[in-house]
Length: 305
Image (tube, rainbow, N blue to C red; front, side, top):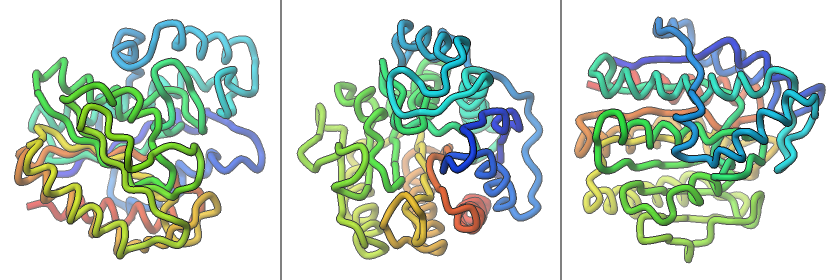
């Protein structure tokens, strides 16, 4: 029913001591699966051709050269890298493509992809904010190209605005991007006025926002819009740094709130997409909190009927 995907190669992306996007995040997220085994599937890296539907080939080449030259920070932005980071980033995107294959192929109703580095800050020609490649954007395009679906909805509840995802799809009416995020906060984008060609919806909230603001936005703003858009596939940028107590955000969502957000999106997928939904890990930097939030999210996904 629910495919749970994670590639241990993620642990080779070493950002160094003290970095919030650390190797231990992968272990913390895996613990959140609460003993439920991963779905057996051969790990793979995304190809350059698969990445190039969202990123320029010049940028893909830059990311590879930055890693291979021994740099410790990506030349395009604030993303720490090591000798294995390019390969790991390819596999992060590839894990999400495996998730799409399982859901679109009818082998799972939904999927949760535990990946690092995260991706929603990576735009066409720039990696930043801990991200190299935009995993969820690549997954959306892959679903459209391989399976011929017309409309994809991406919902992002990370505490930081998914500026990269917005940039990639802001002129594309076939992908609807919805984001709740703290503002003002990194990366400084995501105002309500940023609507693209009409398929971008931002709901910025001040520090201290929680259940009332964020769940209301999903139920009262996003869900009715999906009745008009009618997505063939629902994708989630599941950032758990919007949880109470995260060191990189000041939202106040609880684990129960993440379960309810998951249920809202599953209801949308049931109504419009035959239940097809793929969730992709983004942020979440309090390790204990990440474990608990992943448990709530994955259990909600597994409750699908």
